[in-house]
Each structure stands twice: as C-alpha cells, then as structure tokens.
Image (cartoon, rainbow, N blue to C red; front, side, top):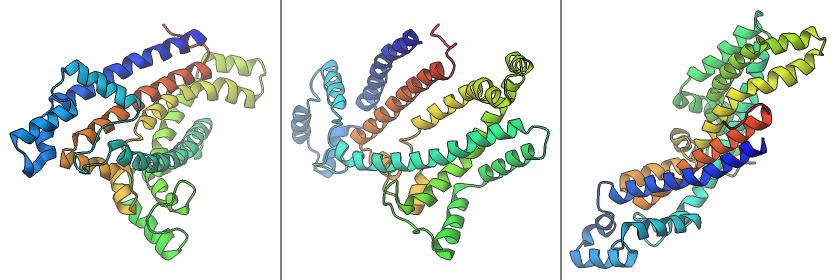
Length: 309
C-alpha cells in the first residue's frame, strides 16, 4: 500500500504543472486584451506600453509562465482589474473561506444522512422500508432550490423564528443551518442510491455468503465485509463533491445573502477580470487533483487489496 500511495503522490505535482500551464495559456491567449480592459477609457498606446513593461507582459512567454507559477505557489495571483490596487488573494481569500464553511456544513448533511440511509435501505431490501427510504430521498432531490429556500425561510425563520432569515456568521452560527439544508438535502438522494446499489452488489458476493456460512456474527459481516467494500464507489463521488467546493451555490448565496465565492466569480466573468478568473480556474482544478489524490489514498485504506498497476 505504501508504494501505491507514494506513486500517487509523485504524480500529483505533474498534474498540477499541466493544470497551471493550461490555465496560463487560456489567460494569456484568450480573447480580449487585459491591458485594454484594465485601462478602460484611459487607454492609449503609450500607457498600454508602460503597463505591459511594468507587468512584465513584454517578457518571453516562458518567463511569464515561470513567474506566474512561482507567484501562485506563494498564493499571489496578481492584481484585480475590477478592483484596482487590490490583490486577487486579498479579495478571494475571505470568500473562499465562507464557501468552504458552507460546503462543509452541506456535505456533513449530505454524507451523514445519505450513506447510512443507503446502507440501511439495502439491508432492508424486500421490506417496506427500502422503497420508502428511496422514494423519500428522490422526492427531496426533485424539489428545486428556488422552491426549497423560500419554504425553509418562511417556516423556520418567519413562522417559527428559530434561525435568522439571511446573513453569515460562520460555520458554528445558526445562520448556516438554512443554506446548508438547502444545498445538502437534495444530495442525500444521490448518496442514498449509490450506497444502496453498492451495498446490494456486495451482499451478493461469494465472500459475504462464505463469511455467514462460517458463523461470523452478522454485525462483523456487515461492518468488515459489506460496509467497507460498499464504500469504495461512494468515495469517488465524495472526491468529486469536494472538488466542487469552489463553485459554491450561486442561487443559495444570493437568496441568503452569503458573501461567498459564487457571486464574486460571476461578477468577475462579466467584468472580464482575468486575474480573478485565472485564480478561480487554477484553484478549482488544483482542488480536483488533490481531491482525487485523497480518494485514491482512501481506496487503499478501505480496501488494502487495491494496488497501483
């Protein structure tokens, strides 16, 4: 298992270099002149040339790429075009923190309810519990966010006055409850169905029947033989979910007035704020690579039979 993990770790820097090269190429050769965008109505050839010289945009491409990677490693993504005089890291950092906290709270709800429900539903196959659990999860999944959010606000905030209507006070504040439920509840159905299907597949395997035939206690069979093996497909989905951290939930952030990265990213796209867009793309792609690395390592932990081929 150690060799498998080491090889996966060695591949990660290579993937990150490829990702950074693609992001730099898109920002460097993409449509629009960033100098013209930054200068706006004050654009002149003389000013543009001075700005290019001060920013090093006249240097060879490989030097610009090397400088970009070096700065990115130090979390320096340049200066925003839209908010001149302010660095991208300064603007993006607090919003990433907010989105990360919201995503963590929603993930706890999604995984904490979805995986146990799927496992329990599979064990109860053939009884009324199985279709009841799956149907209930699918009904929740089918309700759109723009309907769920107002219903939760009216019920829990306006009628019962249990939680605030909007705003953000951090992960451990009551203001996180409604947006976390809005994002997390629909995802319960996804994890319920995947965990249920995976558990049913494992329950039909020969090694499970052999363990029961040998008289192994049922709780040991369910935990050691069924549960651990059924988690493998679920880990893949968790990895892709973790990589979606950056995307946030634009509609939810707008409804609840959450200062996350979703609205900030949308404004940057409309404003053609290339440094912000490149930073978001690089961080998002890097989070996907790192999430896949974590999932690969968890594969080996959950099932030691997995080896690097």
